[in-house]
Length: 243
Image (cartoon, rainbow, N blue to C red; front, top):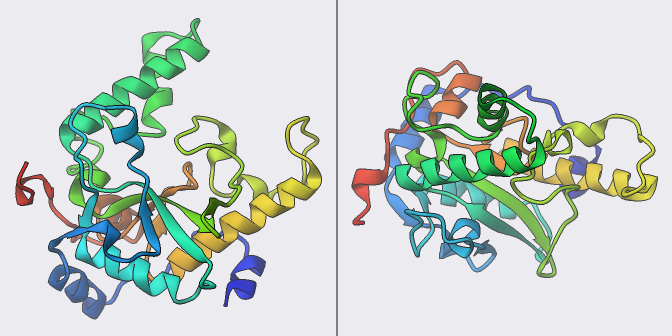
């Protein structure tokens, strides 16, 4: 099926969940270690940079882990998933917002605080801004930041994880090749195919994608619900974990 996924352009035309789908998500909501499958590798990206509130174990809703296992069935045996992040505490969410804000401040020293704030919030939810999302997606346990490994090596997705750049938009490489000193036309086309594999595989099993981040996928959280016009979504998972 991977050959089919390579040919399908990245399009956000998701199937709406049925009542049976919602019931299944509710029935499989318990806290689960994301590394239950040897083909799922937790990279602990925020633990590596010692962000405040980051846990030693990577957790998600059981539904997320089960759907990742299902998605792997459509990929060759030498493919696996790399998870940069999954459940995120509110403390980590706030620390990450500040981390990315400060990154942008260094890159764009002439921008005002308001402009920097708005640029940062394109890529991450500020947990104090409850008017945007009642439950930050990662805090619900329904969001994951993910890529694909082939023979243990990350596929080329065109940018680093968490890169704040237009090239991080999921469908950026769907457009015709733009002359770029860092990216050849051959590599451009390879990136397009790699993103299609990730997107279409996860879309096929029920995930939605946050379209400004090629790595961010949702299942049963408020961002997923917003995209699919669904009223139900997972609550915070924070109180379900023994911190």
